[in-house]
Image (cartoon, rainbow, N blue to C red):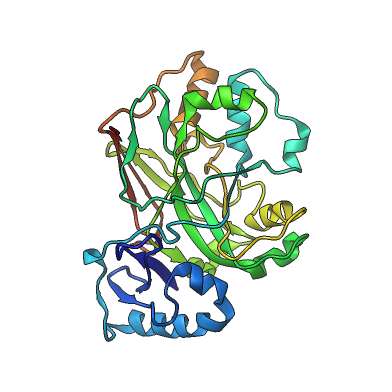
Length: 326
């Protein structure tokens, strides 16, 4: 099923169900007031949500309306826990090669993750607002899963039972702030502002056979200022699956319902596939021609990120513009 959050003027919005073809939406707050509330009581409320979704997919139901007229927030406008990985090793390898560094052997067996800010998660049309472009504004298209309660030391073999939803996101990065932060040896903070999410979160079964082994075997379509930028596939080259990432992050702690786990930038070795972030394109330029050629985003720039299945946008489209903040 497809779940979303309607903007009702509150911080957490109101839970809604969206039809498979994205044409209709119906308020589901009588079943669970918010998506977080649904995740907290998933086993109890999922059957009712599924029944309502199936009815909506068959045609209009009482209280349903055109989805095009709805105002959506991020599926989870704020979350208790947001952990992002870097599971596509082609991306990691390119970044290191561009600065003349080899990739450590441990990167093949030990996933890279960091804990990001989750108190403010942006809607799919939210402006990317900063006071200056000197910070190196970049988009990053990636997938994420949302979990239920996950006990500590969960194995990858068991992790699939705790995945509730799959989402699409734009993990905005401020590239020129990253080197100084990492140089301190204490990780990202200023360089990782709020993340934007596509409006619809879907249960894994909506991906059909594209959901396999904790990976979303789907192409991610990225456009920058209306021009094609990339369409890498998020399947086979995801070195660590979402199940692997769950196993890794639960080695020392449990996860609460509503935890979001990101894949990191989707990346393919095939250069014809393009990229999902500007930094990767710049790394390729540095490796192949010795210099960075493509600038980061400027005020007025736009980015679109989408994933289609069967000719329909699976998660809804992320459409954002860079604007100058006061």
